[in-house]
Image 1 (cartoon, protein in one colour):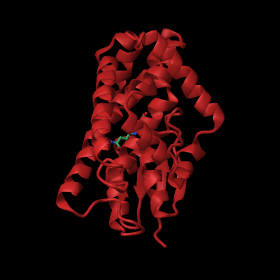
Image 2 (cartoon, helix red, strand yellow; image 1 turned 90 degrees about the horizontal axis):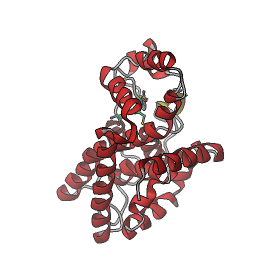
Image 3 (cartoon, helix red, strand yellow; image 1 turned 90 degrees about the vertical axis):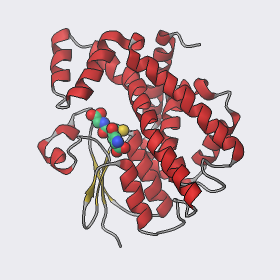
Image 4 (cartoon, rainbow, N blue to C red; image 1 turned 60 degrees about the vertical axis):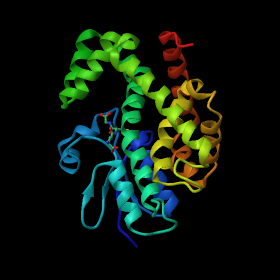
Length: 260
Ligand SMILES: N[C@@H](CCC(=O)N[C@@H](CS)C(=O)NCC(=O)O)C(=O)O
């Protein structure tokens, strides 16, 4: 039995990507939860494990991996259960393409989620408390992005760009899913599991209105959510009070952004 330890957070979309593949492969792992709201990703001990200060991180018997796509490729390389990386060169490169492009969608999802939850919480603080919270983020780019979102909100380039990315990415997905049941053919691949948590996050935030006119994508999402891995890797980490929190925050953001 492979000794794996996953450092992850319950609702982080990148953690979900890896938990989905672990569940698909039926792989057991030791779980270490990292509380992002408390800033546990910035502790000295965690930064020694993952210098980016992000989750997930997977500790294997011979190395530590701190990127969700790399972790999923590592899990695939263990050759356990059905392959999730196509063998044929064309399909394999398309699968890699979705995994790479989904990084852009992740940035958009991060922006929309931050706007709905983190920025709201920061705005509720006094200016001094807000500044000191932001000063505690040891990565200048991430700190600056939050500062901009707090100051400019839905009018920021970051937020507008996030909406544009969601629109174009979901259109591309719908187009691909018109030709095949899954993103890269008749069976789910790492591509599908790389994207599913992002699409689900949009649904939780009630931003799925942005792609409700994309029938192939909607059908794909229903099918992906029906898989036992979704229950184990995603739903199990989203109790009703968390779902409600996302829905309320998402609706509020949707209205404040005046998106029709
Ligand atoms: N490219 C990285 C991104 C990881 C990432 O940004 N994870 C988020 C959660 S989904 C995180 O840890 N954020 C830390 C923070 O909010 O400070 C990956 O795919 O693993």
